[in-house]
Picture 1 (cartoon, rainbow, N blue to C red):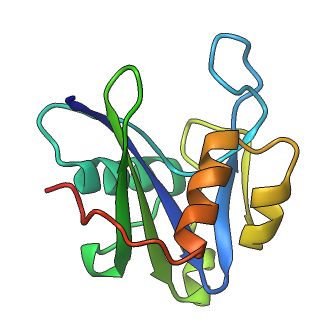
Picture 2 (picture 1 turned 45 degrees about the horizontal axis):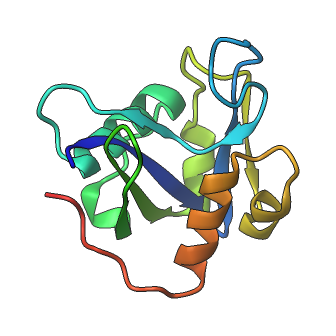
Length: 140
């Protein structure tokens, strides 16, 4: 199955960078809490996709060395990758919301996992990462 997109669980210190999706009925999960990421462009790798989307959505250049985990998930429209990266707390001052989403915030990962308005499959994937399950690499 071809790779279609990627998400990044971006930890800023101990908290997770979360984006509130636009409240537009034409998009999936309107007004829900989401993580940075999106669809593949051109021939980019899964990790390059996640890092580009994070740059576009939060204005952050996340170095590849900050990414500690990646796992592939099979979905109907193509494989999706889920990555986790950790940056220091002071990185929060450099976050600038891009042109998608209503707002951003930092929250404890367990709050995202339990939140009634967080995208459910990303709650599950984040919980999987936090459980210590082995990853699949970085989708090179």
